[in-house]
Amino acid sequence: MNNPREEWQTGTVLEARRLHKEYPGVSEPVKVLCGVDLSVAAGETVAIIGASGAGKSTLLHLLGGLDRPTHGEVLLAEWHLSRLSDAELSRVRSRLLGFVFQFHHLLLEFSAAENVALPLLIQGVAPEVADGRARAILDEVGLGHRFEHRPSALSGGEQQRVAFARALVHDPVVILADEPSGNLDRPNSERLHDLMFELAREKGVAFVVATHDERLAERTDRLLHIEDGTLAPIQLEPLG
Image (cartoon, rainbow, N blue to C red; front, side, top):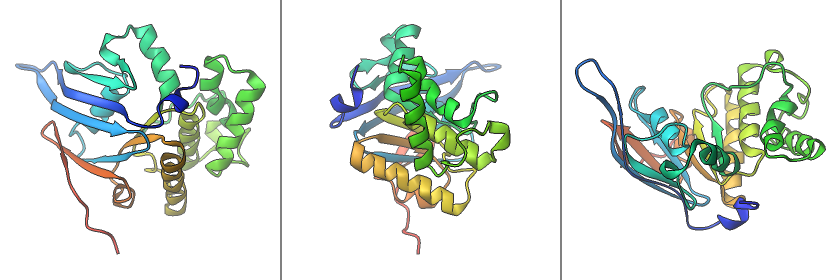
């Protein structure tokens, strides 16, 4: 996996097959996902909408190998995630996936640039190279003036953009995002959305996004609704 982006620029890069997820309940298991199928191609953007508690975050966690399904399987590029050991799964995730979730999970003692560079440092990239890449990505998301600021000195929206930059820094094949622009004002939301679609179009990065933002959802290639543990395609009326 030395050059994952070069190898996976076409074809299906993420696939869920009959995903089920249950959690223990008082008298019987709580069923969250009930046989979800999903196939995502390189460069494709997919939005998932649904009520709170419908299973959007659970699905993203399964797609990203952060949790394992009760039944079914997830394929990321050529890897069957359920067949990998924890160490193998961590290695595949660190090279092929980017995550942007509702909670930023930034390290409070690190600067913005250090937080963004961390995935590269974990991979063994030279510190000066990792720092240069981190600063370039932060500049792309409008934080070129915030390299040295720690999370406590950043607004919630700025922290979200740092998290987005961190998800991009290692050139992933797929980015999974849970409300990626939820803490941003409209101009910065649109800037972030523009960057997402530019990456999808020009670099073939696939995005699976859970969102309540209709303006983001209507720009994606596919819009899916999750309800009662299943996914179904829908279409939004274009906004005026």
